[in-house]
Length: 253
Image 1 (cartoon, rainbow, N blue to C red):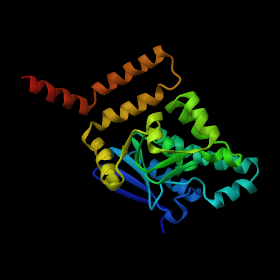
Image 2: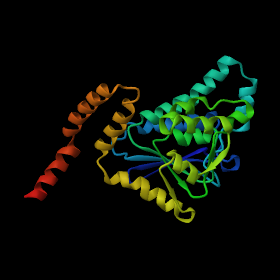
Image 3: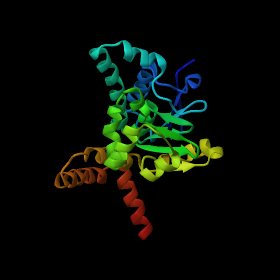
């Protein structure tokens, strides 16, 4: 059985973690397959959005037992190489030109919660649960920390990372960790509708917006404005912008 299912519909690519018997736990091969899917789709100019979801009852429960055993048995170099594989996945998501949407149902825990957090947007079913329980086994949710502290306040991030509790989709929404909650019964339809909106928008504008937003990380205010001016000028010359301006001006006539 393939561990990652890939489907493409109306400019939206869907990546489905397909280890339902393991609660879609992450292992080396699944992380590698996700990374390859992101890298291979990065040059697709027709692509407007990517959805990451899980098969079965859960989104992703984190690392599987074989991965934990590998951590226990490995030395510093082996563990560094293993950690860098997940780090590289988070980076390719961040650098991918189109919006990456995590569609979370059931549980998103540990590395699974990290994977959802690494996506640009997160939507969830009303019964979804999240958590970073790594500290309970002496582990540190270290790489996701770089993303989490950019998403929510420092004190909120500290609490989630050091207390290790599970929390509801409603709590995640109130923290600003996720974007929207949808009804359980219509969740699959809502995923299609949410991602499908990007198919109706200017692809170049959305791509440039994502690039600019993340390039502004750690920039001074002045440098961020300067970077914004450059992207603004580039956007004006795209076919989408030229067409949009012409359409707007024609309406005024």
